[in-house]
Amino acid sequence: MKKVVILNPKGGSGKTTIATNLAVSLAVSGQKPCLLDLDPQGSSLAWLKKRPADLASIHGINGAHFNLRVTRSWQFRQYPDAQAVLVDTPAGLGRDRMEDLLRDAHRVIIPILPSAIDIDTAPRAIADILLTNYPRDRIVIVGNRVRTRTQALGVLERFLASLNIPLLAFVKDSQLYVRSSAMGLGLIELPAWMTHEEPEAWMRMRAWFEAIPDDA
Ligand SMILES: Nc1ncnc2c1ncn2[C@@H]1O[C@H](COP(=O)(O)OP(=O)(O)O)[C@@H](O)[C@H]1O
Ligand SMILES: [Mg+2]
Image 1: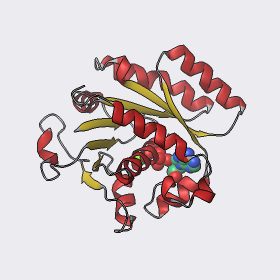
Image 2 (image 1 turned 60 degrees about the horizontal axis):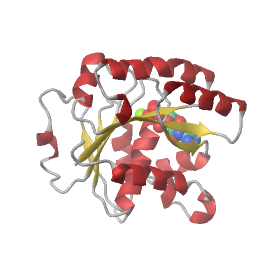
Image 3 (image 1 turned 135 degrees about the vertical axis):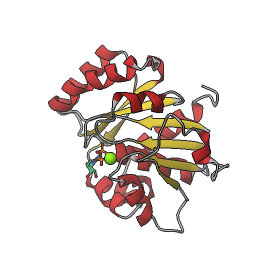
Image 4 (image 1 turned 135 degrees about the horizontal axis):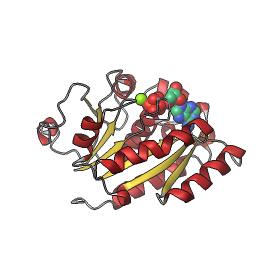
């Protein structure tokens, strides 16, 4: 079972959007993903409740009140066939909780919006992760709400080049994310004529996930 944590202390950066859409990409390819929602607001679980029962199934676990130090595998015992755990985190996860959470995480995804405010706060978020001794080479960034070739995108690209942390994918700024999530769907479950090339980003993320070694 591989565990990926979606983390950025900044609210609204797209943690829930990426956790839910990645869960869908894995589920439609026949994997058994679990969404572990650590956010007391429970956005991932609220999304899951709306999800139509006939679609590829995703397990949800409410972890808002888990003691991450003592809960390891027991919380997943009810899902022995789960292959992926995607952890959706709240804004401003404390240092201790982050350390406990990252201890057994295979990878971390940091979603970043290409806005000046979000780019300014990102180095701090990355530093906080590195301070837990989490290996830098297991962190990736997803640029979220990207519009093509805007000035802000140039700033994000320069910033990413300076960080030495790979950019896994760009997710477009699209109302289709808002609409699909309101129905408990992932963007790739909308009709293809609506989504154009956007599903490619999710295929790339799925391939990345599948390539993570199980014992990492
Ligand atoms: N790529 C996107 N395009 C359009 N809207 C988005 C996109 N990503 C996120 N949003 C919207 O922005 C808001 C915040 O995103 P969310 O994933 O909930 O962030 P977080 O979980 O980090 O707080 C939500 O209303 C969501 O639907
Ligand atoms: Mg959220």
